[in-house]
Image 1 (cartoon, rainbow, N blue to C red):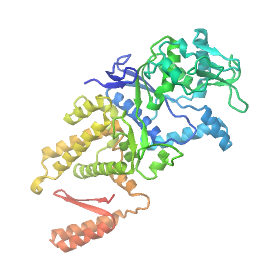
Image 2 (image 1 turned 180 degrees about the vertical axis):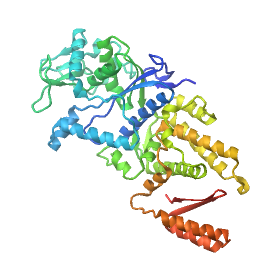
Image 3 (image 1 turned 45 degrees about the vertical axis):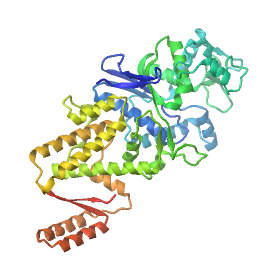
Image 4 (image 1 turned 90 degrees about the vertical axis):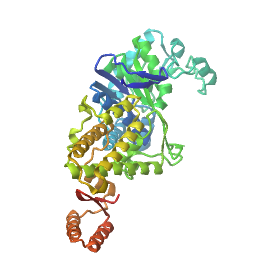
Length: 485
């Protein structure tokens, strides 16, 4: 089955066919670095992290570009408020982005350009648009794109230009020819960052940067452009219009947008007090719990961040790690570092074939996670044979293969990357002290009591361990323990 992606431009799922066999060019709009990232940013970043991982798992050579907007009105305003230079403020939050996304297991993109490093390219694109009659300069030194000049304006978002004119709430600006015209170059204001240009000192408009940077790293036409659904209009509509007019090409062939994130059924807002940064969330939840939650629905669907749902998924992740711990105790430790998403073989078993079918259907991570939980239940049944019979050699071989496939799927999703023992220690929190030597000594005493059929002593030791926060699990292969999390 070929990978199908929902193309926002055509409003339907389409089989993905790259421009060049075996290669994928992916551009994703990154964050504007004036504050800490919130869970909405986390969802978008993780979705496209998964898309890049999945393409690589299928053998594609991927060039993944994700930019930083390091100059705009919000950055300037925040810098003034904090009495900092805009460049220094942007650098601070770029570093914070890497720290937060790194904790969530997000891999770096292949290119991560800054808008301010591409000012010259933006000036050149504006010149081209003006020369071709798509842009105009105002008396004040601003340069605007003329939406009337491009008959395809509105096609990406499915909007009609005349309807937008009639329903526009944008105040009519005497400098604009049409209320939807958007700025390409802003004339300089006192005390703001500025660059020289043929139209005077100033800085570029927001929409321009991605057109220039995608062209610089991927060419005028490339495979996939991605971002949050909030960027579809006006940002991506404007970006598409200016790129197609300047380059006289197709621009992005597939447009992929992830859905919104709400918090307890309300739109995230600082005024409502429900603005949840990644750092806030990581104070409460393990990074993989958050990642699992953000993948728990198909990426285009809205996602509501509720404590109940996140804790429910935490329970599910704990169940998976307990299973991995049991498998390691039974089969020996597996080198999870070898479970690379880049090394998926063609000899996939039935589980991985089903996993691939689900992921091929527009990255159906929700279905893929359901399949994983089903596989984990099956593996636990195999480790708990009826009548306490020893596990057969054939079953052990199957369990080893199942573990390998589970970790292979996890590598694509960025999950199950922790050593189980380390995962449980992290989940228990820093206040939990684990005296491993004492636990092992009590287990040895309990084993001796069970051999002597002194069930009272055995139960007393189990109760003592329970008070220490330790849960025992007996099986024909012996007794294992875990922290009660």
